[in-house]
Length: 336
Image 1 (tube, rainbow, N blue to C red):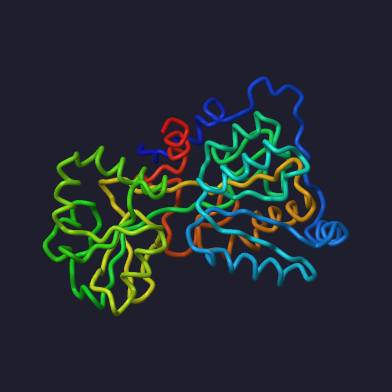
Image 2: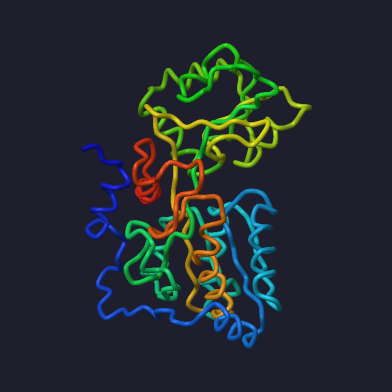
C-alpha cells in the first residue's frame, strides 16, 4: 500500500514532535467557552487584539481582519504583516526587554523553529482553543503552546492569455522549455525560507545543472512571494509564469496552476501561539478560536489543520498527496 509522506509523519509524530523538554505537569488551559462567551470577555478586556502575521504584502491578511471584526462587533484586530524572519527577531527583542515590554498578543508565523524555543523560554501561553483535539498531531505541541492554523503551499502558475495553448508546466524541468525564455518571474531563493526550501528540494532531484539551465532562461528575480503573481497577471509585463510561490489548485483566470507529480512542492502549517505576557489574552484567545472554528476553516479555501474539516473543492486530500509533506519544512527550519 502506498502511503503519503504526510501520513507516515503523522504516525510518527508522537515520537518526533516538539514536546517540551522535561515539561512535567504542564497542563494546558483547555477552552470550554463558546465564541460568544469569549467575545464578551474580550470586550470587557478592551476589545482589541494585536496579531503579527507572516507574509510579504501589508494587505495580505485584510480579509481576516474584515471577517473577524464583522463576526465580533466591537472588536478591533490590529494585524501587522511582515516577513516572519523579521517578526521573530522583534518578538525576541520584546521578550528580552521584559514582560512589561510585550505588546503583541498573537503570533502567526512561518518560522516554525521559533515556537519550541519560545515555549522552552517560558514565553508562550499553553492554551488549547476549541478544536485543538482535532488538529493533526504533527501540526501541534502536545501541551498546546503552539499549533498550526492553516496549511499554506507553493504552486506552479502561468498566464493563459500570455502563453495560450501551452502544455502545462507540471514538473520543474518544464520551465526550461523555450517558451519560458524571458517569461519567468521568480522570488530570490534567499528572500523567503519556504522558497529556499523549494529550491533545495528541486535541486536535490534535478541537480545543480538544472539551476544553471534555469539561469539561461533569464528569469526576472524579485523580492516577496506575492510579487511574481502580480507581475504575471499584469498586462504591462512580459513575464508569464512562476513556480515556488503561492497559488492554488485549478485556475483563477487568467492564471492556471499545476503541481509536480514526480518532483516535490512545499507546504507547511502556518503556526500560531499566544504570548504569555500578552496585554490582551482574551482577545488573542478569541482570534485563535475563531480561526480554528469549523465556520472559518471550512471557508478559507486552504487545507485545514483539522481532521474533521472537509478538503476544499478541487484540492486533493492532503493525507493522500505524495508530492508534498507539510511536516518536513519544520525539520528544514530547525537545521537550516
